Length: 137
Image (cartoon, rainbow, N blue to C red):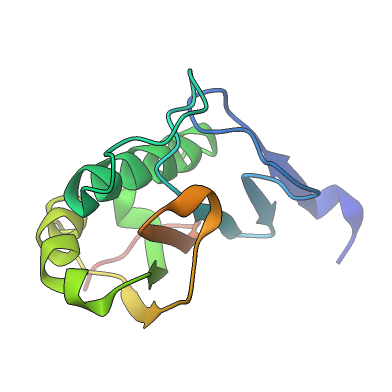
C-alpha cells in the first residue's frame, strides 16, 4: 500500500489520542477507528461517574464524531468491538448501542470482558467502516 492511500483522520469533536496513534486511519476504502472511551473532548474528563449507560452514550458520540470527520456514519460501520470491564453491563450497553446501529444492516460485532480500561472506564468501542458505496441488499 502506498503512503498516499493512507490518511490519518482527526477531529477536535473526539478526545485527542493519548499515545502514538490516530483517532482513525483511512486506508484504501477502509476506515479503522481507534477505541473510544467516555472522555469528554472539551474537558478531557471522564463522563458518567461509573454509569455504564452514560459512558456508552459518550463513547458512541466520540466514535460517531470520528466517523463524521472521515465523511462516514453508522451505516458505513461493518465491524465493532466492545470492551467491557463487567459483562453484566452487556444488556444496558446493548440498549444504547442499538439506538445508533438500528438503520440498515447492523455491524458484525464482538464483545469481550477485559481486566481494566484507561481512566477507569467501564466501556471502550472501536470499529471498522467501509467508505465505498453502501449497498444494503
